[in-house]
Image (cartoon, rainbow, N blue to C red; front, side, top):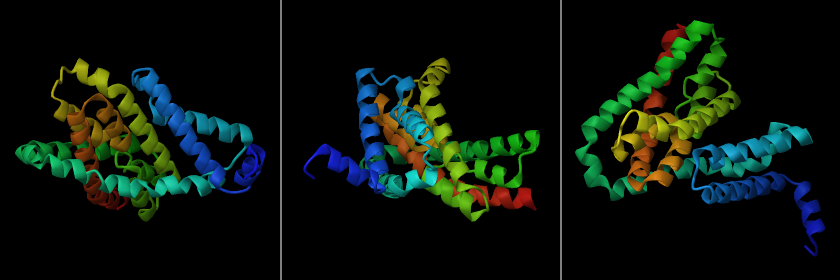
Length: 239
């Protein structure tokens, strides 16, 4: 490319424009978060999402066109989830000592996440496809969307709900844990990873390494638990 104009013409004619914009937006949002001392209100995921949504709305860009380029980032969700096993392996001795409370918290947390959706569905009479899209909201995006699609839900709606769940958890986890006087970073991290998957895990790593470790463990385990619980819940609810 001989000039920035030629580079822009090339990118604008291909899906790479949206991949490039997504990556650049994330870098800028991360830098903003760092300059503001990792304030939860400027969470990079929230900032990036708002900016990209604004650009797509102003430019009248369909989501399908955006995803044609951004899908390369989406593909990395799987490897990123699997990579969580690395810090867990490194800290296996500590994790092994807490297996019983981890198992108990996982079961209670996963059931509570699904149960809250069931209660909401009955309270406001959600349509079946919307309810199914809601059920896996606390699992990581790749797993949640796959579960939703396999059960007849709307994966796009599920992705939005997963994002909202993660952002909400990342915003409130620190003040909420302080309010509850929970000082153990292992417990704090596991709670946010269980309920707010990757976005909450990223926030936990910003706060404390131990919190990040247990958030990652919770996110991975909840993906497995949700894959089992949600299909069973859907089968019972839909009869």
